[in-house]
Length: 336
Image 1 (spheres, rainbow, N blue to C red):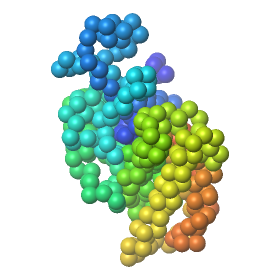
Image 2: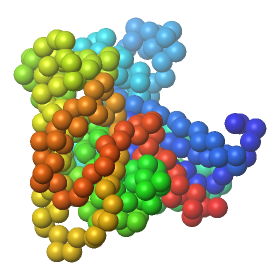
Image 3: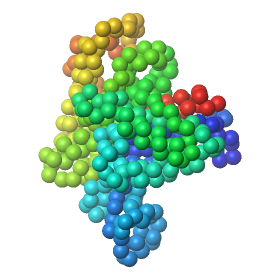
Image 4: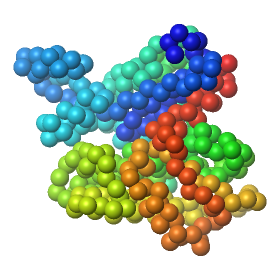
């Protein structure tokens, strides 16, 4: 791919748990670059510095501390029984952590690199305003735009749920429900012929599952994240830790579906969905084993109250890539 011309315009999925970049070649191949959106600070001393250098682990020096970013931060946090830190909290850049902004700049630089041309368009995902929190996206959207401008790009934002519709529901004329289950938020977009009818987010998502399960099990949230990512089957839990994770997954899915029902009840004019629709699901939190089966079970419980007839619940083929592909398509449409 390095020898083939790459089109101008990139996608960037700004997730609480992961950052994912994407670009496309002239032949239509898409290059995906993911990185865990996390960092870990370690006190700077000669032994630690030597250990990191021997292991070839990149680090950043700042104010007497060493900062490790990305997957290395996650691995070292588990080794040292530490909680890794995240530049983002509940789907948005943390306004109270002084280390959040400089670490996010480094992580985005790692994902995107330098622009192919000054002012290259990057379409990045933003959450909708959450329905269960007083947070809004204004600060977050402005900060990410500023980072991209600093790196030499022209930023464009796209609602995360709408990006899922773009990437997963082209065969349905962009009509249906896109759900992105992330680490900080669950984003939902109900779309009618590519036009968002409802867009919202909830602040309960993957991190919330880990925190709640960790609390009842008396352990660290990073430990529950590791259990979840090791290959848990939430429709068939085998340990108390997996059982706790399963319980909170069921609650989260039911909660998200209930919020769709409530949002439709607030609509004055509902489009006429003449055909049954598809629910397309993506995001890292949906990657556990048994997610579709548990989602289907929870949907059956509220099916009679659901405002749209659903013909299929579909998991995206590449659930870490779906949102960024939708953003990439939007960037390419403007940049070429």
